[in-house]
Length: 178
Image (cartoon, rainbow, N blue to C red; front, side, top):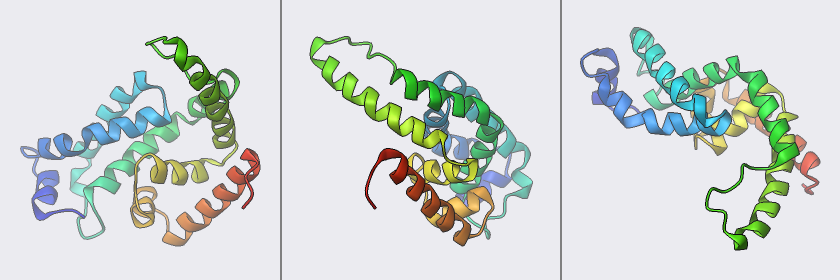
């Protein structure tokens, strides 16, 4: 939900920094989960640059600042879709990156995590872009169905059907009974 103050901050170039301060880290984390952390910083900054440039288009009556920003970020991620799919496929083959701490007792955890991350990454790579966007906006962004619909500029029913199809595919891919 967008407050009057937050909506005013979007519209006022001098006060836009409050929107940045309130949402930057969350958007950066979301992008970092979807793509490499190396480019998350750049894409998060680009998200806010686009938001700043398009602030005149923001309509508080249509929804909140948060889903609007997630929508911009998701569109930027879409431009990097091939990289995202390649990353999931690479994680499926290699597992998660090694832990910098390197403790011996974590080896078993890493192997188990590698299998889990690999299977999940392969399953995510098998989803369509729309299905993957819905799943990850809900899972990584913590958005509601309404916020996802707003972020992706689709109907609520589309969110529900994409999520349903994605769940079916993920369950099948992961060998989980529904």
